[in-house]
Image (tube, rainbow, N blue to C red; front, side, top):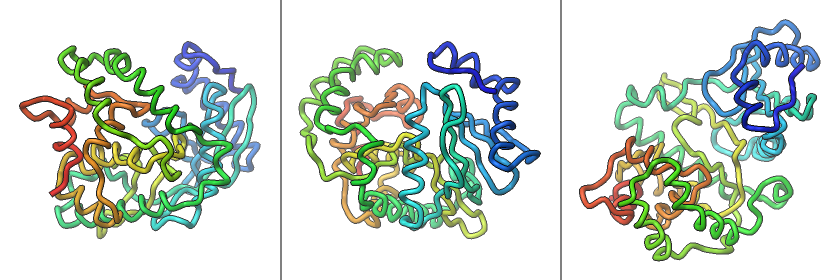
Length: 307
């Protein structure tokens, strides 16, 4: 029912088009014993994701992202019950047709933390970030030996080298001004990063957008979206933490890292911010702003410093 999607052009033509996607999702649900269940497509996310009734979520991965689908299913199964927050329970996963893969998972309860953040009182924000710190500590303590066949990058030092080599071009592609671009090589050269860190399971996108909360008491009720998971240096996960959870608030980051159990080096996390697979410094600058002196060192303290 779903056509092959292996190129960017095919992705743009097929994935946003509900006249194509919905019949395929309905057909797959019928094969999974959920014929007739109402489908509601979630508006966000890079992959097509549907609520299937009230109890299930169906996430689809075209051939161009089939490995991501395999990773998501494997990681969700692996972390089930190991974190101090619910994660989706895999109900079924596998190949569909024309290269597509799927993960059928349980639906978590709660409202999206990013959407609710402005309503969360300060004391509850501090408790929530502490809970996130505990979740991150548990995630990074998970044994990864059975996941190294499905999660990259493999050689962390080689990954850092590749990202470093392409860092300026990546930011130039996002429209970063030359005054910033010329500072990137110098800054990256000044920050030593481990080439063989103790392997940690990384979510890689620890953001408010990927947590659910119960607004009656403001407690975490879920963490989702393990599709881009990796194995590597735990500091890499603090990029999303500083940018999209504590958002440059040093007191919130201090509360989170206290519960996590280890402080983070602002310069190291800033380096990983520039090396992150999805790094987009112009976007971060628009979201969080920059100190007057406008250097990577000042950004490191403004975004990832604590007090």
